[in-house]
Image 1 (cartoon, one colour):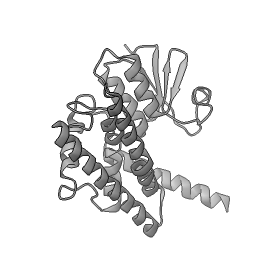
Image 2 (image 1 turned 180 degrees about the vertical axis):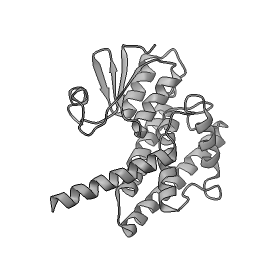
Image 3 (image 1 turned 30 degrees about the vertical axis):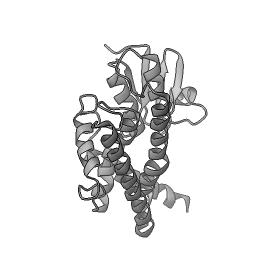
Image 4 (image 1 turned 120 degrees about the vertical axis):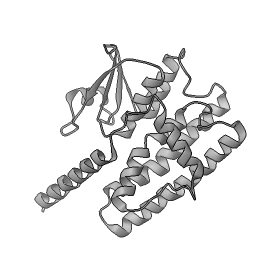
Length: 234
């Protein structure tokens, strides 16, 4: 039975929600999953996150915690008896936060633009931004493996950077499939390709993210909705 003191408000397609679910799995925490359709947004979401009105929201008792990376850190700090998500060393924690922010500022934004952009030429520039971010992350992973001799950004086990970046892998697959263009390739990103396999097969991640085909169907339906809304506005 789910722990009634923990409730996760989210949506099945959101990589930000997946991040929180992975963190909850790492800590072996039970929770109630509450699916929000977002169209319209539920009253619970509007009450729990009145500032941004976005998912995910973790409800710990009657206290809402918002923003995926903030939630992941909160889970790590409150349930500190389980495996650590952030490093113990202050400098290493700072670096993990730096790279998690980089992933969202560079990779997440570019990927979101690729999915939303319908103009082919404009989409190409966003795809190049994704490719640039992958090269940067490959370099950081090689540095981590060289210095630490570990298989993840977080060391021997999944950490904050792994969760932040790994949650984007399924959407990367969506982008590759819909654009007929492979972005993460072994010739350019040998470390990332192997890391992605390790990440996806981890017990805390395996089976958590929906299949690529289901996400593609969601994107196609979303584009149809946007076109219909644009047409009705004319």
